[in-house]
Image (cartoon, rainbow, N blue to C red; front, side, top):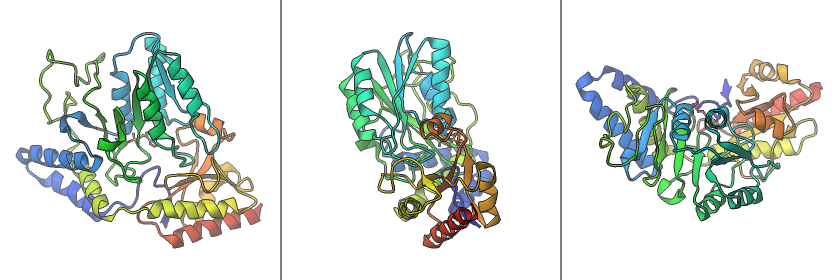
Length: 366
Ligand SMILES: Cc1ncc(COP(=O)(O)O)c(C=O)c1O
């Protein structure tokens, strides 16, 4: 089987990830504090985090975003700007702010190859009251990269914060938080980092203050609050998914020695092949557009309902649907859904050839 749904979850995992999970489950409880501390330190090293108390490990990117977005000190009338291609994990906590806290949500227009209109962001920032610009690092449907460096520069010209949902890029593209200059970053452990499900987290710069309307997270809120401990985190998260955190660290360690640009190269090759064919459409910018290792496409002759099955009958695992990003599908003019093919470190050129053969067969059938 050729697995090509790494944007959904990475597979296979390196053998060392399963070994680390198993070792964490067999170590006696009195040693688990040390297991956590060393795994947390690996995550900090991988992400370029200098102050470990600013990295909170959670049950995934969704819970990390809910905490980070929900616990900022919102005032009625504050504005949040996002792109049109956000995943539910970011869009939903923002919808909740709009419903419950009088926050105003502005969405920057999307154009293929230009997933976030910088002029719109600049103008909205000028209008004042923007508290947060929050975006994904890349569309999880088309793989298109958002202009993160430019956004951070614009946001910091004003008194606003930038939150990066890096679920689609951590472990796929190099990242160093000492250089990025973002304010908050959330990530998913089971995707690019090659960790197990149920682990992820967020980091917040020391300058970011949170409040805890639901008493779930109390970071960086001044001397009145108890000093943060690095275990189990800097807020009371209850029992921690230690085996998951150990597996996450093993994934990061595997990447430290083995990561390469190959998954993205494979995606570029597939994008070029799709761009040359009639009968299928590459979604987003053209094949030269900067992407992760993810390609979104449609093959009208197949019909959305049969596409996943067609590929799976030929031994290829892909994802078809709305990918938890319905506004992205609307912006792309494909509200019914799209086919997504995404490569990982265990794919190779032959996998791309096999995918292209199946696309050709599907087109011929039509
Ligand atoms: C852009 C984006 N953000 C957030 C998430 C949610 O991540 P998790 O599965 O760790 O909750 C995903 C998962 O598909 C994603 O693609």
